[in-house]
Length: 110
Image 1 (cartoon, rainbow, N blue to C red):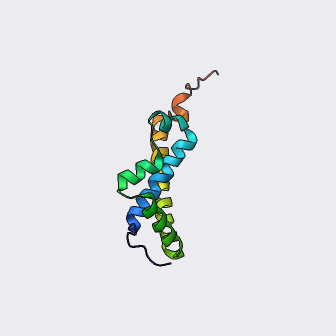
Image 2: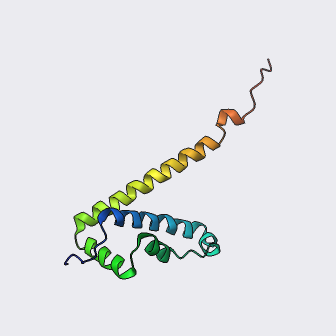
Image 3: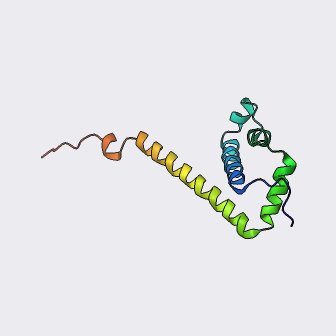
């Protein structure tokens, strides 16, 4: 496939796909959040990144036609998602009491 004239640069494509994955996860877990805030994922992303649906689709098709490049994009997205998940997990762990903190001290009944 020929490279489109208005190809979205690889880094920007990673950003778009990363945010798309996050927003999709929110939509699947908390669908009312996006609805209550009247957020339409693709419209939001197109506006934020200054692209349109045709540019996104043609860029996605082009990258898909170059498997090594497409793989790099999705590996970068996966790496960012993993880092985000790990940082959130760390925050959650810090907010929870440790098992030893939540149990009363043992008394000696000898």
